Image 1 (cartoon, rainbow, N blue to C red):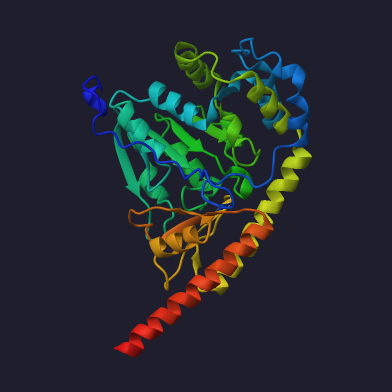
Image 2: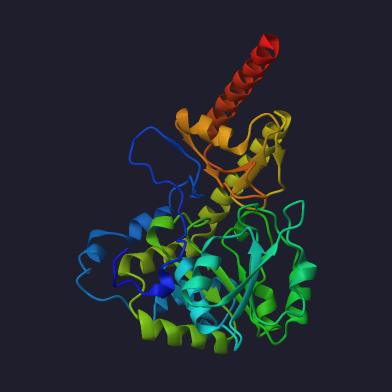
Length: 365
């Protein structure tokens, strides 16, 4: 690091994204991207005419997209704010909504950016351990003294909370902001959006990266009370008023309007997820109940690192987290059926090789 770096950031541990390979021929199941392309309507709107307008600044109000989101969720436009990916929305939230004591509570493990943003914006982070079964202990989120942020479904587990538990958290924290990060909500869990009419301490954050197939466009959005959204926009216009480019605005607006394509692709992912989970369990894996576009699995015959490395050598990328209590697991993004079949074939080969090696070692002893 240089001698000019603010000492506040010397010990900062940056978020580590999943590998983005530079080589061809890999099956990429490590970053929870949607295996299906964007809506055909997205491809139609990104035409030469719109590309020729890139010398112009985009609409800072993002009016077309805000209106489309508001229409879809039956909200007022004043209840919607759009950002450069949900990561930017979360960063703005950490900047804007820390209470006087600057305390922020979130599950551990969870999405790595929560801790990173807490450190950047000098909040007092209070990670709350998951239960032994890796589900969130909702009792530990009641009557706290600070901002609460929970990914639902959970990251990296995929386990979803029910709405009754989330409402209990909202009720018991009337003086605290509760942020529900719904990046994976469309793959089987129920959204908290209906609660926005009852609770002014709720902020719901979603993304176009997963279920809308626009990870490369970087579009996220927040939904909340008019006052919360006004606060977020105050931060946005003080920091980066042109935070979304012209093409991403158009792409996201068309993506959310094409509900038929959205339903078709998300249902395909859910169906494949259920099938792969059953087949992994048949191979002896423990697979957590997932409401996301991935599964979280472990084997008692291969360590998480062994399984990750074995797949990587055979050109399949998954995600492995080295820290306990999830070091025995790998996170596997749901891809197309052919990719998942190849994953299963390689998994069988790895298990057979491991069993043969163990048998040889026992024989030699």
